Length: 408
Image 1 (tube, rainbow, N blue to C red):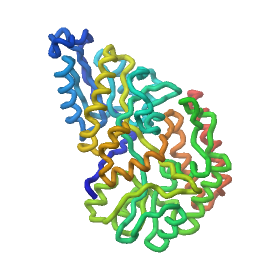
Image 2: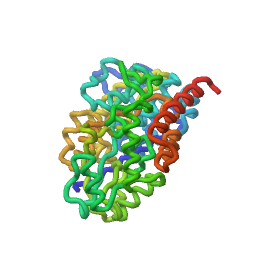
Image 3: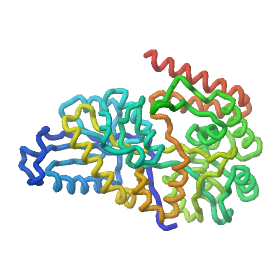
Image 4: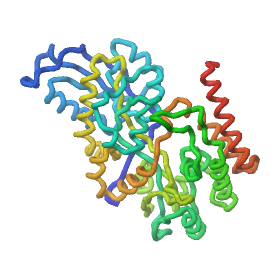
């Protein structure tokens, strides 16, 4: 392989230390880029990009030289409630550059995010999944920065070429050393559900309908039946976790593994001879994997919103390639992706991202994770049938959402 990708999923980590921003004022004129101290607009941005924070500050300094404004990048992590308190104070940040899209809804529903200006960028310039991830309840609150997903890893000492279909994959796995992944997680099971026309929440008109749940329909029953058959055939079990599956591949015990670019460094360091390929098709359909999009948003409390939007646009246009080279964050912008497709591993992930879709950017998704895993473990252990799994998962999710909105 030409290089490694190190994308940290970090879907639970958020943002930065409390840091002040300067007074809002009129930006310097075009004829005097440096301006005077009184002319400058000072903005402070938080980021959860640790490796790339220094790079972002260098671009912030370049932007400052060109515009006469000032931009400060701050990295750290805090809880959402701390951000709420900071945003409502005089020292709150002007925006966040780099947050997983599944966290965006929490900020939007707390009225902490400004809506993206209609003319800031065209949706057609970005990966479809990244565009979808930027909307919350029909409004665009995020600017897509980078994308990541999971796909198929295979041990090249055990497998000559990647399989094209899941039937071929299982046949090969039986002969060459098996496959392991955490099939009790909705994150890894999304593709099975989508292959049989099931879904989590229905997506329509740039919004998710959380009342329209697809986890109990006939397609879901077929997906659960397929997974249960993999248990019966000896490929899966209720006790296979992410760590167990990754360790088995890292130690050369299994031929196949489903994982993300965050796994690559460990496999390379362990000396595993491996390659990455797009997921095989299932039920004559491309296998859908969840795409996590790192987005930027502007605080609704900021008095410098125009300056922040312009800075975001500058970063995405100017810094995207170096963000990839520094932290291996695959760009969400299509034109930039074309510049890095010579990297074989990156190309495999980009191809899979094209078949992916975001996990719903709604707060209600948080109610699903544990109950889905609990029911899948019961299914894999033989305590419930696929039909019962479908019934329980959907009904329990509806009850959890109702309780969530009741304030109880």
